[in-house]
Image (cartoon, rainbow, N blue to C red; front, side, top):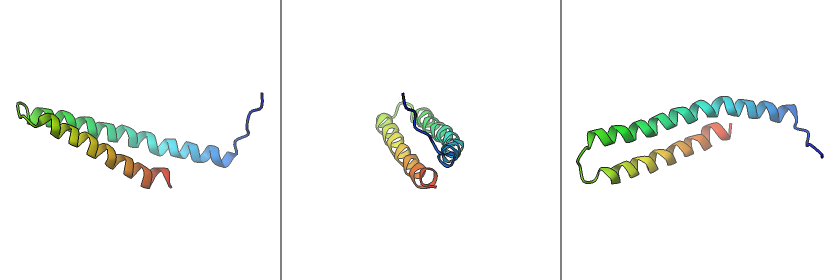
Length: 75
């Protein structure tokens, strides 16, 4: 079986990517889930609560993916 040799430069880039992306992932999950919980508690009994939560989830998810692509993946 042949194993491809990975250059030291690529290994270092992957380590730096992990150092930057894992904390960003944790923070973005806290923001998304915290927002969903906060909306659920604030709008308890409101008839559009579910729709607002879906809008929050989709909007913040897409925003975090855009930030991840622009500032973490490309650098």
